[in-house]
Image (cartoon, rainbow, N blue to C red):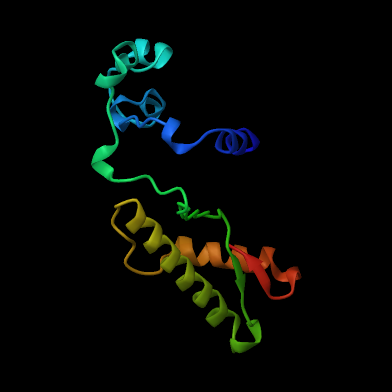
Length: 149
């Protein structure tokens, strides 16, 4: 960051030259090509060895305006392996209703996971889901209504 600021302070835009992405060795790492030109990677683009008048130019893009700040917006999505589930267990009138509700939640979670992985989703709550719900509720009983699934 400091080096970039120093370069910007000690140069003017007329000294800068434009390099198209297809000729930029720095962009080779982000391209998915089977053949990588290692000479370009090590020595730079071939046009640098030619006369400056033959170098690519940026005139096609209009005048350079250094007063405009370019910002790149980045969206970072973090997928947690466990999600916090908060439930009011007193809402359920019986143990059976409680574990059936949690089993239904597990069915919903498995349905979403199946869709993400392009698999066929489970159709209804099965014995395995009921057992998972019971085990979940029994193991988290001491954590005062907030549990992790």
